[in-house]
Image (cartoon, rainbow, N blue to C red; front, side, top):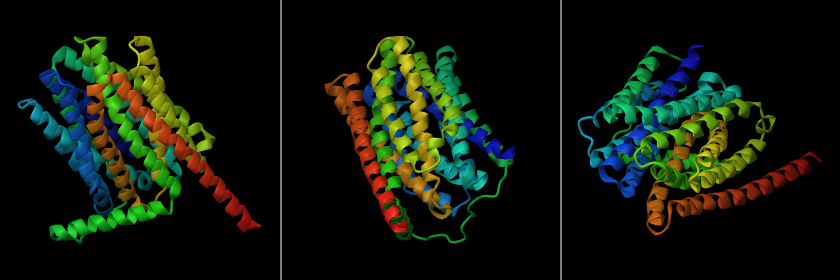
Length: 407
């Protein structure tokens, strides 16, 4: 039972992270009224993730992952509290960068440690529970941030946000397990040696991916998916504003909250699917990704509340399925390299978001929000469909080769 406390602790960190998304965007948009500033906050958070992706996997493989999670929780709590006395836009952007960096460090260490704690044979069930708790955190975090900010103001929201990280860190301090990695006694000295080490570690991961083509394909879809994701992350607060300017924060939280309820449903049904027990997991992952994008396009192209909430719910189902299956696929990697594989996955996600948050505002200046979403998610569906066909051909070729070898 104590092992599950680790998952609940991660859910607390997620709760704080989802509150961050609402409150940081609301703070900067209220102060500036500019979609460009809001995109800058999201981009800063993403760039922080990109920077962390360069070393978070290495840290997770060389140092105690539990301690990394504890440190990142307490540091995030302190950073969020800085916004109470200093709510200026530049400070919000700076905090977003640091939060993105620390979130990635926490997530890579946590995800890498899952098979060590629960066993390889339990990763799909465990990831489904993780996704379920994440979705519950999302629902409570988004809706809670919207309601609390509307009723009590941003400072109270920031305080509660910070307390979630503090409590998460305290629980991790109390719960212990046999970590997959121990603190390395070898400490690299000098910037040159550190950069060289990072370079060779990254090369090792990409060499690993070359001999696992389906894993490489999944990561490519993940990269393009993050690129497309910047459009709906920018589009949802704008959609909320178009519904009600006075209650933007409330509707912003509600849309993501309904999306989260769909995600929760997916986590109950996904482990029961026999189709994900073998290599077909890759194809289910691709299909889920395409339906996810169709959902985002549909509800972001509407101004009718029923359609918005209905398709936000459906989108949540496929989004959670895509991300859960992606994590399960990455966790099939060997423990010795798993942290770095996740680090590369987070790097791809962060790079996709970073490029997306540059392109999305540029599209938004010339076209409507709906067109922006159509262009970016339409591109993702097209690329995923091509990769899906390539994966089918590769799988068929492998089966023919196996049949020839047997005969």
